[in-house]
Amino acid sequence: MAGQFKDIRMKHLPDNLPLRTSEDTKIPPSAYGVRPQGTPKKGWIPPLYQN
Picture 1 (cartoon, rainbow, N blue to C red):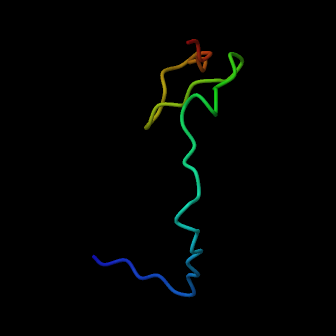
Picture 2 (cartoon, rainbow, N blue to C red):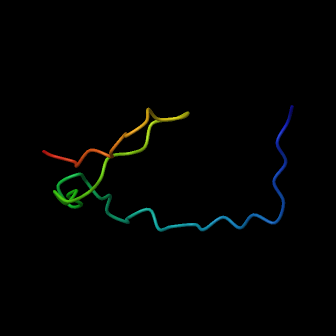
């Protein structure tokens, strides 16, 4: 099976653009964890992200 893409516009960024690091973008302590794939168990509660 092959995927087809139509009407895609590529945004060309300058070469001297600085990269963002993990220090630049901290995850807040109140952020929730990601839901697992598939059907979660009954009573599943998303965990809070903790450093």
